[in-house]
Length: 401
Image (cartoon, rainbow, N blue to C red; front, side, top):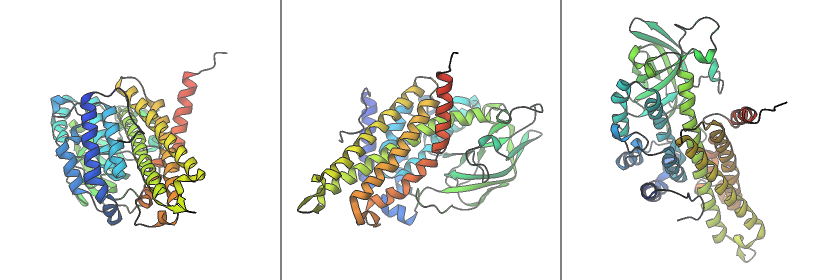
């Protein structure tokens, strides 16, 4: 086991789960990841393996058939999976955000209906906030849910939907103005709708279309799509929590979990880049000795390892804060920001260590080099994280003049 990115204070069960996931990554993910990624092929066998391991139910309470584990356990598993292939961690991340939102905010009927099947991996979750014209400005969404008897009719276009095709349950954020007086803050007139659908592309249920897969620079294998609602009818009992106007808070709660996940992904990708860099540096010879013996390369390895260790520590702290029941938006924002930035830097240093071979698709570092940038923008850009961090710091350190 690597000396880097160790976590103190884990239970025997947590250590056993992590050892199992690490073994799965080494045997089932790393040998095939680059080939699947180059073909942009969905990792069906890997996903089936994760289902058999019970990972789709990792954080779902035992009463619903899950393992009832903590956010920390989940984040450490994500770190291991991202070390193998970041796209696989994306497949389970959106699933867990929806499961977490259901657990925290769902009605008893909603929890009973969905959580046991989500724990078994039979129902797969995705969530949708972003739209083509707004990016990180969630309060500006225009998709709308209008009450019509015992149903809501949803209209609008969503963007950047991870697992858009393979999911069967999508948590969709829409504006719903009924019952909210004129002048109500925009974020208080949003509602999360639980939309069930068939997997696949095209019209996956009446009024709901998944047009096709967006072709991306990296983060391949996992399907990223648009979602178009045109007269999509949803029963009123599929409003998350049963009450309109709570969607923004529900989604932000889920995104805090998602930001810890993205931090964990950054840690995993950076760790793998370090492993590749330190191994190659000992194999490649120049001027009669391994390049690892050149001080310039040793300096790079020292900086890379320090960044891997620092990002891991901040990610663990953010997860533990959320597990304790405390607000963790400051810690999650810091962890996501630092881990994604450090990941980019560690990957680039490993790329430089590989020299010309880093540019070759035969070498794994080429894949990591294209994957790392997604972490800079996923679950809120670095600039958004800094805004959140800055505002929270001003709350904590308000000047008493």
